[in-house]
Amino acid sequence: MKKIPFVTKEKVQEIVKTYPTPFHLYDEKGIRENARAVKEAFAWNPGFKEYFAVKATPNPCLINILHEYGCGCDCSSMTELMLSEAAGITGNEIMFSSNDTPAEEYEYAAKLGAIINLDDITHIEFVEKILGKLPETMSCRYNPGGVFQMSNGIMDNPGDSKYGFTTEQMFDGYRILKEKGVKNFGIHAFLASNTVSNEYYPVLAKELFELAVRLEKETGADIKFINLSGGVGIPYTPDQEPNDIRLIGEGVRKVYEEILFPAGMGDVAIYTEMGRFMLGPYGQLVTKAIHEKHTHKEYIGVDACAVNLMRPAMYGAYHHITVLGKEENSCDHKYDVAGSLCENNDKFAVDRMLPEIEKGDYLVIHDTGAHGYAMGYNYNGKLKSAELLLKEDGRIELIRRAETPKDYFATLDILPIYSKIKF
Ligand SMILES: Cc1ncc(COP(=O)(O)O)c(C=O)c1O
Image (cartoon, rainbow, N blue to C red; front, side):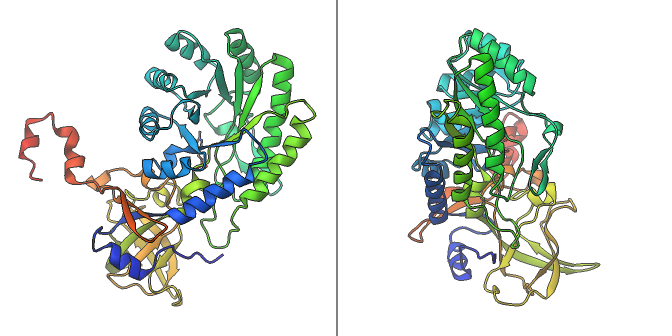
């Protein structure tokens, strides 16, 4: 499918008069349409709730838009909990799905009334010690080990992943939790990442529903919800077919009716914790070509770098690039599109066929709405960019300002030298 940016060259030329490149731009219209579609796809399940994975895009304005469609927050750390609380999302609208969790974070999650999703059986005692008494509602993260397979092959490798309880630990864990007074139980699992297939959730749901039936029968635990977590992917490359959330919802409904209804568990709520699917396609990194370099390869140097988008450097991930104003030109030039970090992997594209790029051209790097800005860092003292929202009416709203040197040096304010830094 052709990837078309949600901004034009003319719009970017207007935006840069106020907000210089690089910046992350989010598309309010797309976010709302997709959030509505997710809600509709699971409307057959009265308890359905999407807990948006805050780690994907920790911006309160975007979280609040999603909240309008009933989305809560999936938090994994203290600051994500704080952000959720500040956005007015507390209590059982927060799922706290963390791992290797510090005591203070459990304490804070409990204070907010969040649903705690345990990553390990040893955390039962850990949490009990911290809180004095376990909450009435608790969830456990499941990891069956082995490989996760669907009809088109192996999707991921849970046996190699650090997360979750083994099958045996699930049964032991639920018995222990029940003995300790927990009344409402949840099951959670994240077994494959970025699945561009409508099959993932239904296959996962089948496995979890069967487990839920056995768990309830064998431990007497009252399973109230099953959290399919994240992992629903997006088509980063133009040749991929986007997932159809309606088909995914229907697929989950089918296995729900096959497995949970006959077991008398037709009141179990379905939860999700999607990040990438909720916002990935509705964010784009806009950057300007500032240099061209002709050496052993042809390079285009842009004003963004891996600090703004780490996925290509970290995983060799593909992000589609459109040169604004040259959408219809033929892609007859082979480039490495590079940032300015002193790291040779700081490249948004390697050997990519693109239209001829001139200095001053604006490039849109697609699908940066999730795990984009959020993964940024400050190597080479580079500063993180602004986040902007393209409103439905075409206005631009600044939803996070760009970092300044003051932000970068803020943690040196305990040193005498701080007063000598010229801002
Ligand atoms: C516990 C948990 N839930 C949800 C997500 C969101 O995943 P995705 O953005 O792939 O939907 C993640 C991603 O790392 C995660 O670790």
